[in-house]
Image (cartoon, rainbow, N blue to C red; front, side):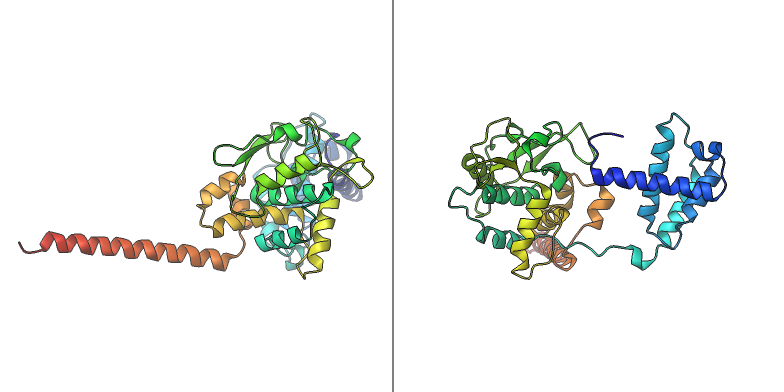
Amino acid sequence: MDATVSDKTRQRKLQYTAEFLVWAANRGLTEEDVLLPSENTLCNFAALFARKLAGGTTKAKVSVVKSWVQRRGLAWEGGNNLRNILNGIECRAPASSFRDQRPPVKKEHLSTLFDELDLSGSCGLDHVMAAVSVGCFYGQLRGGEILPQSSNPADFNPSELPTVKDLNAPNQNGDRKLRLPKTKTKQSRGKEVLLHIPRKDPDSPTRAWQEHIQVNILGPDDPLVAYWDKNNELRVLSKAVFLNQCNTVWLRHNIPHMTSHCFRIGGTTHYLVQRIPPDIVKMLGRWKSDAFLKYWRDLDSLASIYLHQHHAQLSYTNCLQDSRAQCHYAPY
């Protein structure tokens, strides 16, 4: 198994594989039935979770079995029948299998966080916290694309996470591009993302990243999210530390618990509410169409904005047509 896969993902894959093997043993299947499972066998395995699990979870279990089979150089027998079974399971998933929608991080949440960070002094942790929070929000970043699991610099892998030199200098508009060595969808091919700069915003990503790099005296090859702690030791901001610091502040202000993905959907919602065209937001956030629609938030505000915009355009068009008609028929 790929050594770069997180421990959590690795454990889940091992769990799903073991689950399939135990099920096969209890069914009295032969070694051939297990190593080269027929579509009928796969359908029976998937049907085990009908009305018990969400469709996505069942598909994940089957996908792990598929990878396990193909790693052995064997053909995968799953076809239309298996797809129909999986689709049926998704349609009949129990309500208890669905997770509540995660709340989006909002601009006011960032302001609350900034109010409690010491950004006037030399606190390295607070400066990197500010940079990462606005970077994840305005860049619609996934937390795992810039934040490691470990705070130990010795564990940092520059082929997976960005270093300081991966953050380009601001362009003429003040925006910066960040090269991500590895992403969820592109993997090791990486991707460049645009960090748009709301220059009048006190929580500007440009200022936050610039001050973080200066205060923490980071070189080009240092981890982008590295900082010097109170013991004057170089550390790397991990996802766990970042979220714990954020949620500790927000808890005091009755703001709900946030995950790293809440920054991504918060940034997406922010741009949509600012009337940025959805296709532009989708491109900037590297969204797939179905996921992009699923994670829209603040639908009431968005609907109101676009309806008012539509009616305003319609009224303008009607007025323009009326004006032209009057000019055309006006007596000499």
